[in-house]
Image (cartoon, rainbow, N blue to C red; front, side, top):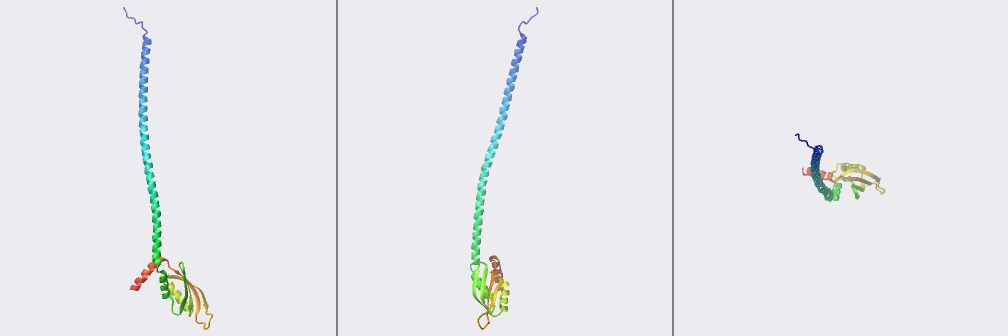
Length: 196
């Protein structure tokens, strides 16, 4: 006799396929969830690493900024010290400037010219005096132009004497003192020539 299955096999097969479908769906969802979690963990790790690098760079930049400020402060202090040293060196070079000017005036004033007043303001020297002739004043101006310390002589005025006998004329003259560093070099060259 033939075997007849009277059970609802179609519903059973349909139920079986639904169970298999749900199992595959759950497995796929689980795998997708795990993959998403792995990707998320990977990217979170990458973000944390980048944040650590950024924080390291920020701290190093802050350290470098403080060092740059220190360098700026050191440069300002160095500049201030250099200015002070330059001022001290200038004072040292100019210490004997008054004596040097008088010594140089003795060399450039020819016989027949007499100085009665000498005044120095900054780099300008003004002299007043008496002269026997204009030629002697011209000679004095030429000597000043070749001087190692004095330059740019200007004869401001020359007036014939008001008192009899009119032998001497009154004059005023101004001249400039050469800059300190030039005088130091010129002085050294003058001393070398004197040694020869």
